[in-house]
Length: 234
Image (tube, rainbow, N blue to C red; front, side):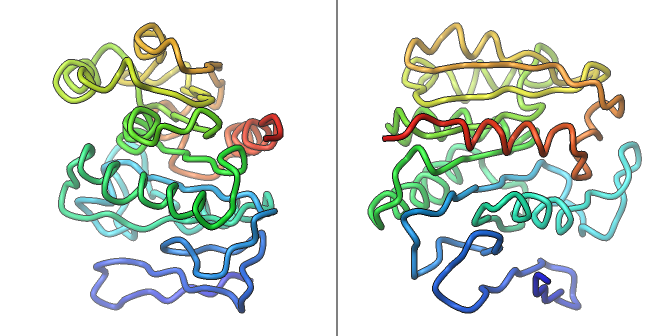
């Protein structure tokens, strides 16, 4: 059973380490000190809603964002999960560079092959996975972009934030989005700018639109797990 401490003030939810050494199926807020180079690591990046509201407050359209359940579902797929609740409208480029890319570098420096590391993000977190792919310079890195692309609200992000980095994107990227999502869709535009990106995309039929990723639905959890575990050996 995962141990969770919930801060009463509602500022964040902290996930504490299991007994060391780190093992598959555990959840951490940052890269653990004692790394198992044979484990598979998954860095999960949530969307915008938890940045502005407590996770206990339902989104007016999509309902409760089941952050803890999502982390546990991913951990149950035998990943060492690394994730934290961001706050205060985090700047995506700064966070990708100073936090996520640094975590990937720390894992690689600790002996974990890039092929055993996955950065999986939803919505704003999915867009940040694009930035990580451009900044990390790790062709073997696995990336999952869940509802982080599209021609509506994400168009401005492509043009103003990703424009300088797009051509440098590298790694294996899986794009997932729900067919009923009115704001997010294909990542084909991002792929067209990145010759160094191995890319697959799948339209899901969960049916809850953007809210399809607010809970650990097996359709996307299983697909993320299969993608991460299908990475070719180094």
